[in-house]
Structure formats: C-alpha cells, structure tokens
Length: 231
Image (cartoon, rainbow, N blue to C red; front, top):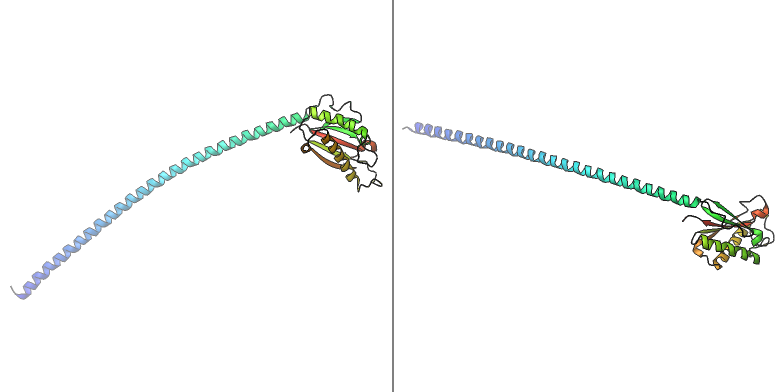
C-alpha cells in the first residue's frame, strides 16, 4: 500500500473518531441540559409547595389574630360597662337624699345637699367677731355638734372647709384681702375639727372671699363644711 493510501486511510479513521467524539459530547450535553431542566422543574415545584404552605400558615395566623382582637374588644366593652355601672352607682349614692337634714336643730347652722355633698353652712357671725379669724367661745359648742354628726354619720369622708366673706373692703383687721380673711377663718374651723377627732387627711380648706355672696351681707359671711357623700 502506497504512502498516500495509508495517509488517507488514517485520516478517514481519525475523522470518524472525531465525529463520534463530537456526537458523544453533544449527547452528554443534551442529557445534562435535560437533567438541569428536570432539576429546575423539581425546584420550582418545591418552591411552589413551600409558598402554598407559608400562605396557609399566614392565613391561619391572621385568623388567630382576628379572634384575639375580637376577644380584646369584647373585654374592653365589658370593662366599659362595668365602669359605667360603678359610676352610676356612685352617682346614685352621692345624689341620694339625706334624710331629715343631719345638721338640723344646730343653732346658726343650715344643712344642704348638692353636687354629691352634704353641707353644714355656719353663719360667720356665730363663729367670729367682725373682721376676726379667732373662734368665739359659743362657736365651739356649735362646731362640737357639727363634728359629732360628721363622725357618726359620715366617718372617713373627705371634707372641704370653705371660707366666705361679705364684700366690705378690709380696713382694720390686718388681713390683706377678704380672700385672706376667708382662708384664715376656714383654717380656724379646720383646726378645731381636728381637735374634735377628725383626721387631717380628710380635711382641706379653700377661700372664696366675697366671690360667692348670698342675698344679705350677714348670710354672705359664712363658713361651709362640705362632706363628700361618695368616695
């Protein structure tokens, strides 16, 4: 066999092997692509399943949250109703009439009920000399009776002692204004009530001076001992 024939034969065999190898590589690549495609399909299916599971869990949690919010709303409504009932009970107790004016029969004292309080309105001229804040001796007997009523019928209740004056300007008493005089008189009454056994934590004082006058000047000069009917 000549050299040219031998070379052609070798070349032909080499070409067939090369084509076979190329074809094999293409088949392997195609199989790889198919496998990747299958894997991606499986991955997408797994992700879709996980997404559906998460969506179901979210819906379940939203339902649980809605139920919890509904329970909170129901409890808030019950609490509001209980508060309203308690407030109505307090108002009813505070506005209940006080039988037979507890301060009735005490000379120089008028009883009244308003705004959830029972009041002993003591004439200023019974308690003090003109322009003064020192209790008269006879005033102490009056306040003894007032203190006894409070201790027996309204124990532990909050008490306001309110000083009032007429509108005459201060001239000789030494007080700066009628408000100062009203406050000093209220303080004198408070101090005496403490001596009679009432507790300091129960009692506070205020002065309206001439700002809430009554029909006459003698009536305007007064000390009001207001006892709270509610808590």
